[in-house]
Image: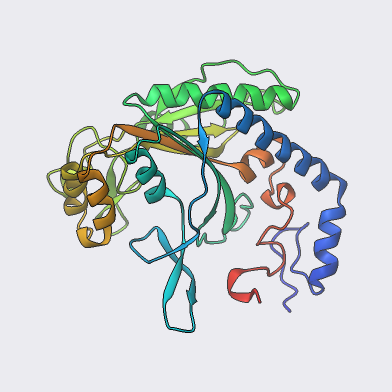
Length: 326
């Protein structure tokens, strides 16, 4: 095993069992896990009280589009293949289309995140507090999330004020140099801010337009082509706490023709999204949602800079990576 380190306090383990047990016995980790349980308890209580229904969606499925990640492929003896699903995006939109108006899930999600030097707030597997609701007003979703955060913070011993300040993404970058600004004057403060109105697309390093969000994010109007897409904003919003993005969401496209326009403008193969297009064509109300990162939220509220300190079995602790699991 390599002796390389990812941070001064998180070395690659030569004895995985010993390292994992030491992590679990760490009193700081224990306190953070208690905070994490409190977050789950308070989120569930608040949203159940507001009429949200909890569902579970598949983790393995057919590789329909990019929301079926290429991290893991499972194959049966008969040769059937299933792929790891990155997030419940398609499934929750199907629930909304079926008449479920308020959805909640503590969902296992997966990303093939690159390691960045000095950054320890990402994991390949993480828990997303996944929320979706019927609405045509993004402010309604933001107010709902604020009520959740008030309850979570109160349980953690802090009172916070709402509504949270808001600024659009262009202003955040222009004034703070980032779309995840840390607005604290007091380092012990919990400072929330909404960053809104992200563009539908922007040029990549080669000048080719690429999506900023995801193909289902609703733009202010249907794009005519990729260049036009770069001039459009989406009904989108990120929740930032002390410089960390802890949540991201938007209104979703609920019309099949508008969804097809986005796919064509961005040169995405419509056949990869045919299930979604069929669902929207069958009739779907206006809706939107948000995903809150449970691991990162617990990390930020605990005052930690290392997401491993808020997770019992972080995949990036040592070499516990999907391709090396038994």
